[in-house]
Image 1 (cartoon, rainbow, N blue to C red):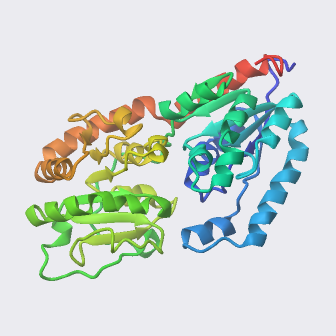
Image 2 (image 1 turned 30 degrees about the vertical axis):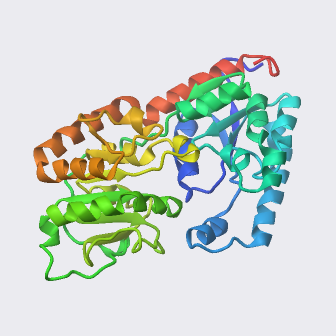
Image 3 (image 1 turned 120 degrees about the vertical axis):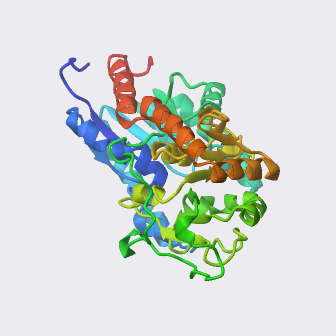
Length: 393
């Protein structure tokens, strides 16, 4: 057992390198805080940037590269005994049984699992019968093997309880308040390094820079959700013209998802350095989602980003969105096309409502969704685990 003065060493095993949103938010953005607090850290992601770039470009990942990722993770586990805690994002080996997690538990090592997505549905709701037959309970077994399971919302916590996890801790996905400072939205065209603008200006349209802006930010895998409100957006535009800012990868295929006139959509290529300034180009942030099992496990990070920038939001009433959005105070929850249309029209036509809701949302994030607050909760959890006997957590 360590003395209270001794600091622990932690092996972080995220799913992706920093380019991957979930890993960046759940692991990498805390590393400086761990270092400042005197903890030793080692980070080894499962997939590499080559894999992510192929996925984001809608290419099939190279088989040899994927196999290398599996081999690398296998050999990293040989060093696990040097660490006081092994922090795993989601699972050790995708689409393999929970042998690794169970081995770490049997070896007396403190395994910490972190979930911000309903990855168990990759298995128990897989379209492949063999995957369902062999791996439906894979994540449940991993959760039972963990000294602590960190979850981003209640849907994930409920699964951990049913799985028999011994210790469950809520860990919301949060933002770094120092990065998300209040600033006025920029009306000028983006500089080259901020992204790429798609769609030429149409002289027949209203002057775009004079219009309020609806915006959406997300990864390539979530772009499809915009189709849920394409009709509502088109109908709103006929009544109140607006600009639309879309922040996504350079290869984003959005033209069949947004039925808006040429020149209305401004496509900015996401980058970590520029995302806050890109968000400040918006007046209203949106987050449409279908009410399906996978989406119920999401942690509403888009909404947290919008609110941190002082933006009012409109979102589908799915999963954690319902917890974050106080309907009529910091935004609106919209289920039907009519709901979306009425909510967006109210915000587009009333800048004072946008400002009041944005201020309300920003206050919520500053109070409950901060990086330093989360870090203190994690640190307290680990300090308590440090003085428990391995195997008796």
